[in-house]
Structure formats: C-alpha cells, structure tokens
Length: 382
Image (cartoon, rainbow, N blue to C red; front, side):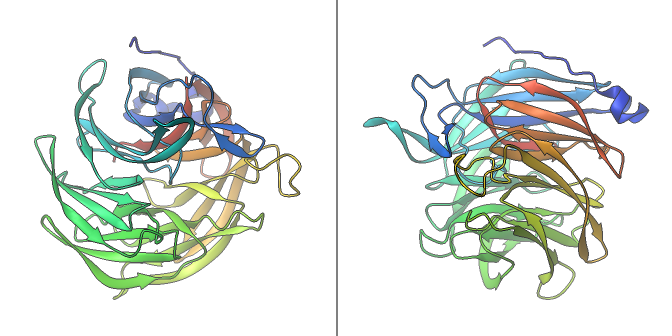
C-alpha cells in the first residue's frame, strides 16, 4: 500500500521550537465502525483496519507509512504502544467482524508487532493476548509488554528481546465482567496499574523481571476507570473515569505513587465521557478527549454537536482546569508532542486527527490529518 503523505503546516502556531521536533506517532484506525445516530454499527463494505505512522518535525505532520492490521474502537484509545527506541510498535485488536454475521462484531485477541524502521512499515509478528485485548504498554527498558484483556478479566504479559515477543503468562484479576481496560507501567518497571471499568477498581501489579503478580491492592477513583497515565518521574498517575454514559459530568483522579501504598488523593470533574487521556511529557498538564455527548442520538437531551479537548494543570497533588477547545464527534485518543507544544486529537466520525498548538495557556487549531478509517488509538514515542 502506497503511503499517504499529507503535509500540515502548523509552525506558526507552535513557534520556533517545532523546527527541532522529530518524532513518531502511531495511529490505529478502525474501518469496521461507524456511528449512526448514536449507535456504533458495522458499515457495508467496510475499509480495512490499518495503522498510520505519522512523523512530526520541521513544522509539519505527515503520514509516512501505513499497514493493515486489526484494530478496534472498543476499549480505551491506548491500544498502541511504541518501544523506547521507536523501532517497533504494538497494536491490539479487541474486536473483529463476526464471520457468521457481517453486521456484527465479536471479541478478538490480536496483538500485532509492527516494524517502524522499514518503509513502508511491516508486520513482524501477530500474537494472541486475551479476549478483548485493549490497552497495551511497554516498560522503559523495552523488555516487557502488558496487555489488558477487557473481556477476560486478565492481563497478558510478554517478554521482549530483539523485537521478538514471547508470551509470559496471564495475571488473573477478576471475573470476565471486571473489565481490565488499560495497564500503565511505572518508569522503574517495578509496578503497574490496571484500570477495571467493569467493577470500578484500579489494581496494583508487582513486577520483578518477567514475573508479574497481582498484589491484591485495589484503589477506588470514580465510576468506570478507563485510561490511565503515569508521569515520567513516577510520582503520580492520572486516571480518566469514563462513567456510565448517562449524561452526567464525569471525573478524573490523581493517584499519589510516592505514598505506600499508593492511593487516590484528588478527583475533579472533567465533563461527559473522558475517552482519551494523555500527560504532557514534562508532567505539568493532562489532556482529556471528551465525548461531550457527541456520540449520542441527536434526540438525546445530553447530545452536543461537538466534543471537547480539555487541558488541566497538575498543581501539586491537585487537578486544576486550564483551557478547552471544541473538536469533532465520537473522538477517541489524544497525544502530546515531545516539546509539549502540540496535541493530536482523534475524531472517529470525521476520520481525522485534529492538531492543536499549545502555549502553556491556550489551544489554537493547527490543521488536521485525514485518514481512510476512524482513528481509534494513538501513542507517541516515549
């Protein structure tokens, strides 16, 4: 497949620092999902799922490669992980089209390993994680990957050596209704936090080499903890509590990782359905991609004709509102550039990644990248 290379000039809104920017972003795009008046449906003749590799640098954002691999909008938009050396990416596929009924999807367990050093990118391997494979993370040393299996109540562990993944067992957390959604690994590689949107818990895992154990310590943040991010210093984590989708304002919580045991120390309202969450690389800000009712039926009293990108400041051990901007519909993941001056926001209905410049105080629209399927998961290189 020939790479599509749209160029988006946003240097003016980002400032001179963007000229030094050069990094990789991976977007997982779901072709089998479309929104019909608030209902996620399989389109007739769906385009294939695929991954787009995006390069940021010198005032531009461009798609430099594409590869067809299973992806899914079901689950948090942390279904992508990039290795510390940016040589490969992992992408999960939580759902697939039912071979017996092409109008429906059923759980899948795919974990794809993608070579980012070739042009175009190529598939290195495809493994099996667990039922409803969703959020995925790689430790900082690049030796271990963890996958949250949302419809199985488990986390799959894989050891990594020379870009080769080897299954290292599963960690049992609860019933298949517990809903492990995403797993985040601390910078020292000794601990992981797993959100459980099925039973409203955040579980703590202990890691020693390739051995991963459930400590039986759980935290309670809010309704349906979903996406979670840990800061680069390992001092705190922020979790997005996606809520039951009943139109109420949902929340985000800050977890103090320096306390023994770690615990939730602050919870703040963010708005309807914080689908995506991303911490800035300096740990000063956290971005939320809010559904804001944009994925509800138009007759719903909770419907809004736009989503919201919301930025909160990390102020000590508290979350403080800073700024927000209107975005598209049924939007999913959000990611920061390394210099914290740009955000990439995925919107499913528009099949776009919207770009915003950020000066520490305000957001400014800075173009968009058009895709051939709905963008459902995104990560930048660590």
